[in-house]
Length: 318
Image 1 (cartoon, rainbow, N blue to C red):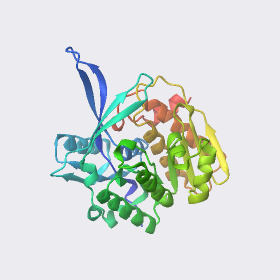
Image 2: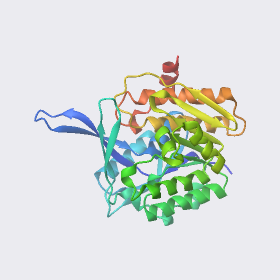
Image 3: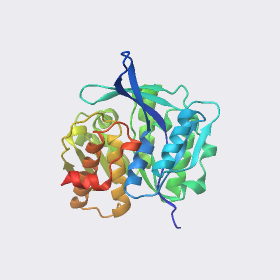
Image 4: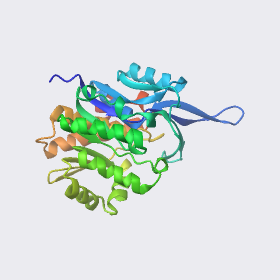
């Protein structure tokens, strides 16, 4: 069947408020940056020339309107973006530390992204993609968890490649046990897993990354696992190969969206080369580009509107 989209992602679409200095009165100023991991990933894929669509929900409010306009603007299909009449768009306030790392305060009790229901997941729509991408923020609460599981089942039954970035945000879970359970649900479905250093330690209980990955590979047989280690770079685990590419040194302003940029770049590589016969050379090439793209985005604020151009990434790699 002719596929209309390269990638459909399901999940959260929200506003990241990032610090933007102080006003004359000495008050904190915030910049309203459109964000949410699954859409950040799609935004990068769009920059690389792919066709994408988003499945999710925002509030029928000024921020929801802004988010829809932003997706339309960057070319992400919004035909399955629902607007909730009752519940406001989810907001995240990002507090950045001097080293560029951050912590989040979420306004999501409830937030519109949690209100997506299984009825709103249309089988025919999901089947239009080659790849289905998701995270765990759409698995924190019952209704949206059912929606995510329904979409996953449709994707699996119809032979889509499934990509997963757990994107663990502890403050959003009622318990870390539940977080662990839902991450494990995702591992059982995915063909490509993008996981960060702290997430692999959390899920495997092992300090050593390689041991943690071996535990996951043994339990879930995930064909391709990509481990991100912040400024230290990334690793790919595929069949019996383990490839590592060092990170790139940049002056980071903030790290929001770096993992998603990496993820989008890697998914793009899978779209172009498949998952069947990747060589060590392929994996190096994939990680080198993804690392460079991720490094570039840390030099800008926000994510969806800050994704680097392919030319800029290649130039930076030179």
